[in-house]
Length: 459
Image 1 (cartoon, rainbow, N blue to C red):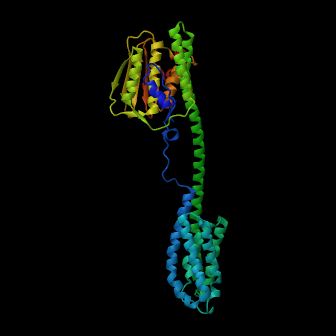
Image 2 (spheres, helix red, strand yellow):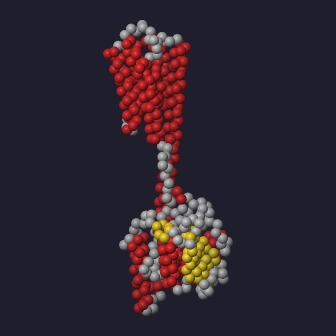
Image 3 (spheres, rainbow, N blue to C red):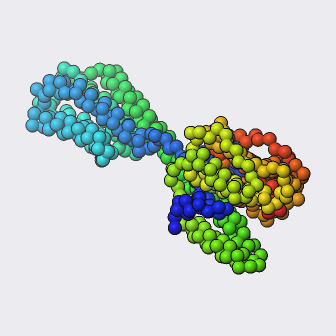
């Protein structure tokens, strides 16, 4: 039997408690300082979290875009300088270098083999530098301009920074510019002056070094972000398991108090056949609820109108014959189904406590109203004998489990106000406000003691 079906059945049975289904809550206990809805409530994940993998894609695609621009810039000069080079070898070198750049660009788009393609670009470029003088038709002829490889030097050092470990990438950033500088002073490199060759070398090294630093700083930063995120997810997983365990404990404690214990007490007091029949019916209901607690929890996003919740509370109050129910400003309000179940069960338990333990009272009232958090507030009050919260037994479960913990687990708050001779008022609010500053008739320490670990005479 599903929990939804059980709840629907409970709507037609007077005086029968319904099982509580809860979702992760925002705060537990009246002493919680802040409600953290993102940890155990509905989590909001970042839409585009920064990660190491994403930074790698951004860096590689940026380098690929620059490589395409510089390759297009060097293409006219490459065609111009083919006249002074051996076509049988010069053209294949140019085609091979262009092909590796194209493969690198494609790899960044499909996110496969990026480092391998980048390493190929760096290797082919360095090989082209070394064989450049050997591929000239006349090695003694002075080239009229810089070799077209100059425009791809920063592309090669950037690809090395992406593909190689830090040490080897730094070494490549030094070796490639120096090799071009040595080539620059040769006739095949334009026979530039030594100062100009040194300036070209330093410029290429500075540019390559800057790109290398940026890449590795971003890698280190995003690696730390990934580590922190993994640690946070691990802690979140532990917190969720702990929370699930606590919610199960609250629900089982509530069932034990609301049905099992009540059934045992009823059976112990049987004096006639009618009493035996009633005890048997209560036992069957208790077994069903225990079976439900062992099943899957309802975690859907279904909502229930507050007016419908108020109608259920009115029906339960009518079965007692002593409570007056008032509804205020409920039009258009709805709350999650799990919260409605928790509020209904806690309200019924509060009414039962009043009837059983408050003694004679001139009035007993239930007020269901909307609140400023687009939720609802339920106040159950009586003018009975009240009780002293400092003298209650810690083994009682009524207030602590069936009301306080049950409401807190659903994301709400239950506040107790009582003193001897002045009656008792329990205010149940959903959702919990950021700061609970409700006034109480007893001291804060006493009220907290009553709700978190004590109970008065069965309450």
